[in-house]
Length: 344
Image (cartoon, rainbow, N blue to C red; front, top):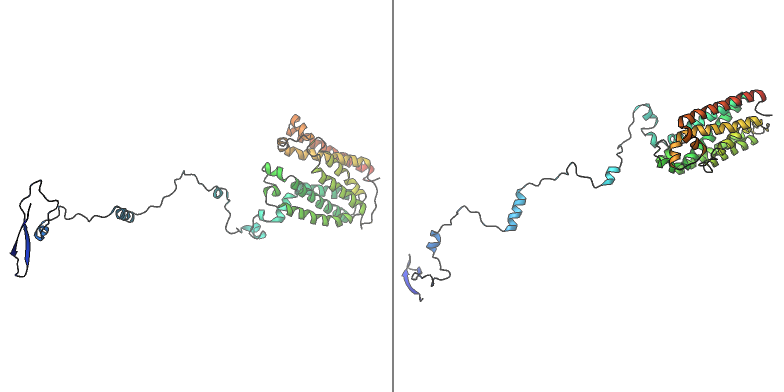
């Protein structure tokens, strides 16, 4: 439809407002959008005056995140820990603890950190001290002067210490597999290289000690020690495991009978009966010591004689019979020694 326009004076002579007079359109003729006058705009009020201005969805999400406090998530009590290394890593004290006289002597360190103590534990100290005392006593009873008996004691003590270190080096894998905590080398508290170094140093000490009682005596004791160390490696798992014990102990009477003072002593050969009894003594000690390792040796498939007898008799009976046999041999050595002496 045509529009009719007319001019009318505004509020001032210089201002005029164009008013469109448009008849009410019908439903079909209604324009898509009708212009609004200033009066209409000011007259109309929004339905919801307090309505907040519209914001975009992204801005709304940012506002909500900023408004809500972020709570730190804590792992559930029963949630498994993924870091296995943290579980396996031992907790060590930040500083050494110094307590008591022992802490003062060790400088605040634990015994596991003191290499001499670990070497002492790996030396089979009980066996070393017992054997050394026995040899020193036999030397004194045989009529050797006190200084010679003392040298014999020190020599055998050093030799048995070397033998104990060597045994733990050879058995370190077995001891570790069986979880023996009293073995410093197997437990990793003492390095194998350190043990070998100690063996070399001890051997350098052993040579002058052994030769102080004569060259022949030193040779026999060195042979006894070599046989015992060889027994740590050869035939120890079978029925001939006793051979090294018998041979090494059989050489000890010769070490005593050929000994003297000053390194020039020649001495005499030992009595055959004493040599035979010394070999039997070594076999008895082997059986006594083997009792304590029968379970581990059986698990490893060993077939040596003490294990076979232990399976038939039981460990308790085997220990009792071995002890009785060893004591009987010692008594026989005392009787024979009192009658015929140590040497011819």
